[in-house]
Length: 273
Image 1: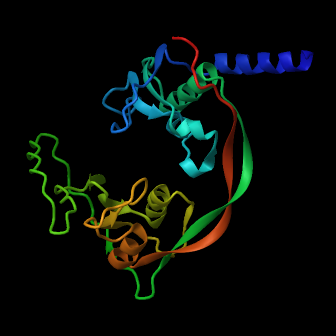
Image 2: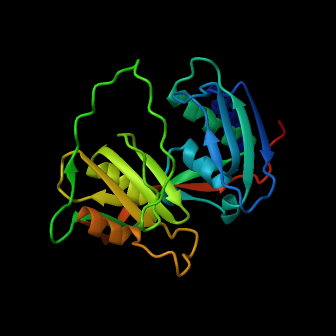
Image 3: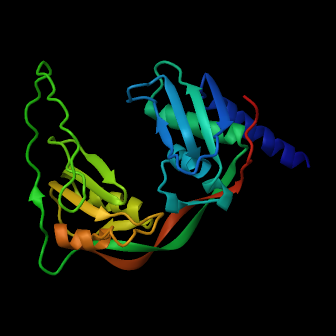
C-alpha cells in the first residue's frame, strides 16, 4: 500500500511539473451523428493562444497528443464514440513541443489516463514500384514569393467528369472531397511522405521500398471507402488501384513490429472544470 501511494505521488508530481494550459474547459459534446470533429489552434497556427476541439473523439485526442497514427493506439472501444468539446488557453511563448506536453498532461490529469508501451506485430505494406515503372514528375522549384502581390480570388468549386473536386491552382498540399471521392495534391513530396499519408488512409504501417529518392509533384484521386459503403453510383478506384494506375506504384502485404501505446485506464467522465 505504501509503495502504491508513493508511485501515485510520483505520477502527480511529474504531471504538475509538465507544461499546462492556463485554463481548460472540457465538456461532453451534444450527440449529433451527422457532425464531424474539428481540432484547431496552438503554436504555428492562426490562433496560437487557444486550443479548441469540437465534437472530438477521445481516441482522436490521444493520437493527436502523442503524435500517433491510430493503428499504434490500443484502448477501450468506447473511446471511439465518447466525444468532447475543449477550449484551453495556451500561455504566450509556448513552443510546439510544450504544446504537445500540455495536451498529454490534460489527458493524464483530467481523464486520469495511464498507459504502457508494447511491441506488437501488425499487418503492414511495402510501397513498391509497379511492373511498368513509376509515373511521377520531378518536383518543380517553387516560384519566388512576392509578399506584396495580391492573392488571386479562389475559383468557384467545380467537379470533373468523374465527380472528383477540381483543385485550385497553386503548390500547397491540399485535400478536397465530394462524398467518398477524395483528391490530394502533393508538392515536393518524397516517397516517405507518400507512405505516411497512405498509412493514415489504410490504417496500417506503410514502408517506402520504392528506391526512389527524389521529390515529386502529383495528384492522387481515389474513392475513400473507410467508414462507409459507396452506393452503386459512387464508382471509382480505391487507393490501391489509384496508386498503381495514377502513380505506377503498388502496396505489397507484409508483417512488421511496431511500438503501440496501450491504454491501461482512462475515465469516461473528466474531472470538473
